[in-house]
Length: 315
Image 1: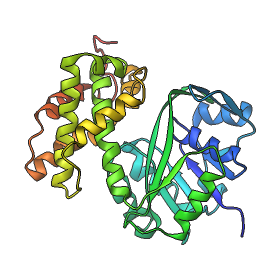
Image 2: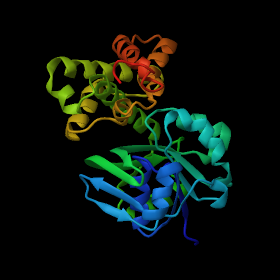
Image 3: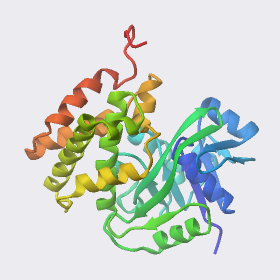
Image 4: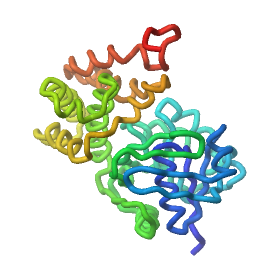
């Protein structure tokens, strides 16, 4: 059987560590990146530092042209949520009849947004548990030691392609779970990230500040409770204690980190806010579920949704 070809679309805080782990396992991995980040990766490799240790991947097969790669077996799709459709069209040269595209992003709707572009049967579901940022061209910094990849078919089946991907991960330094309930896993990540991203962005502080302050702790729990209620209204069977479970999970990751949305806000970048907190608000409206805390925090963060406003007193 030929060696599977793996392509990482986006060499940021998810794609770089996951792709590097697979490459270190001896697999055929190519990164799609752009600009100064791509230039640095080609010239000096990819450096990843942080709580899981430091390593340097060099040389790094990397390009900004999907057509130069050819058809892939697996595409790990990691762009920001506002780029799903545009990037989906961009990577079509990678996608053949048997290609599996796995979006690994913070939201809950990437698979349904990609399916009309790439084909229903070519898209799986994926969840990343990691906190990392691009520190500079060719450099990634991980905040926290947690790193896990959960994936599965959207219909809950266990397919040969999913089992093969699990074997590839097992042969690498990438902890992975093949899930029969990836929709439930997507919502588990969604509730967690909506709470942590919203609160670390709103406070501009480490998660520990939110967890240690009684008022902020009550607020993050309310955010998670509203997201859970919306999930139930969408037909996802989330248990009564799900918000408390997600909060306990957040505590277990250690508090000296911020979500990627908070990192983007601090850097003046565009935010995934409409697909996270805003998604809870929108679905709440559609399903008749009140989301007053999410709505308030969404409104507070909304001026920064497209980056720090020009002339803003916050700089």
